[in-house]
Length: 113
Image (tube, rainbow, N blue to C red; front, side, top):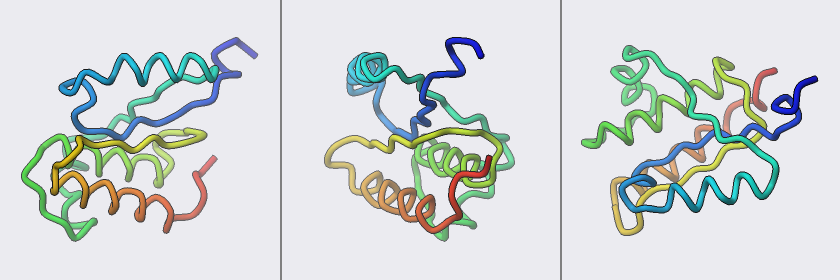
């Protein structure tokens, strides 16, 4: 086993972390707990179809990406040990998506191996 295989893999599903300036704080916290942040890969077709699956239309492309990344996790395209979900404060659309992403992940079976 390599050192990176021993790290806890956390998927970051977020919108606005870079814009708000807190990404460096997230990265610092991840290092403190001996983890690595994963940004799940998605296909453009996943992003195009995600609103239909969620039953939620959103204006923000970043929020669509966030929902598609959640699907990538629950379908097993990416293996993670945990999920960190975060959005900007006071953004109503993001608050709705954040709740729906949490619900979506929790209603699906445990993370596929």
